[in-house]
Image 1 (cartoon, helix red, strand yellow):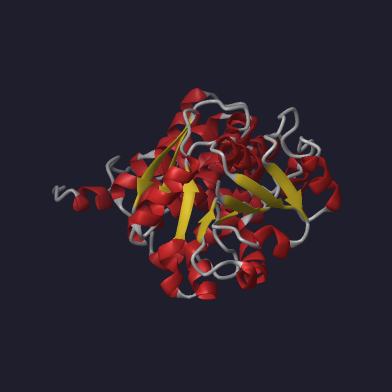
Image 2 (image 1 turned 30 degrees about the vertical axis):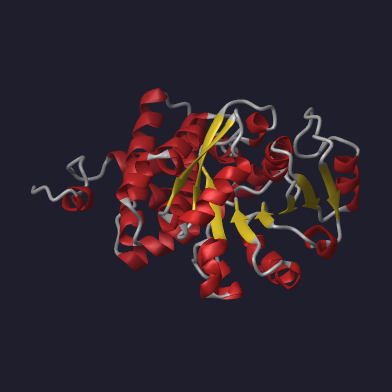
Length: 344
């Protein structure tokens, strides 16, 4: 029986604790608030995962040192903007050989770094071999209820990815491995921007045609930026790419989509985020992706229009008109054609 520490006690952290406990691991969650830890210890996280009876091998504490003591693996289940701070606080208590698994889907806003880059900056580049990302189409509300789900574990060390696969794999939680850490991180983060966009389209009252176009062309943007940053093309056709994009853009479990719907219906960004009452990762990620696209010289028109809606007061309806009025384009991207050794 392995001791697993999870930093964070939100919906996704709690759902993953369920998966690990069912795999006969002892799981200790770190909660920031005492009342949340007490609720988990009483068998239910009413605040973030209501209605799910927690496995008896799950417990929670507010003391970081106690949570991390003796853990052979540490899961970071906190929003991306909290990752560096909590990593800094945690590192003194983490065993040098422990595997670090990050499950946040975002980019650090201040540095524009992927979270594996944040980890390397704080723990050292040599530690990246024991770092992995778990990503893919996976709503906490469904995972917590044991609904069949498939995800991907990515690490630059295939043995670490395999370890994470074994740690989480159950009869209803299937884990694949992928060595493309860059692509898996970017796919998980950037799809939230497109989910905001499909939500905005829904809020405006547009139909399935609009949503399908937004998702398809959104995937093209994600792929363009990903390839420019060193990702593998095939990753974006997998679970961390198109799979996560589909589930986030179409489900009402998606807080990014729900936030977009509110904006499309006329709410301000602050009002929309406040109505979700949880972190909406896509808002920060939109700003970072817009900056990265300019830095990399990559065309991301959907991201640009969503950025203008969120931060420059462009009306959602005008953003859609701007996208529809763009000049004629080939559908197949030049970068994709080049990577396949095709010619125009």
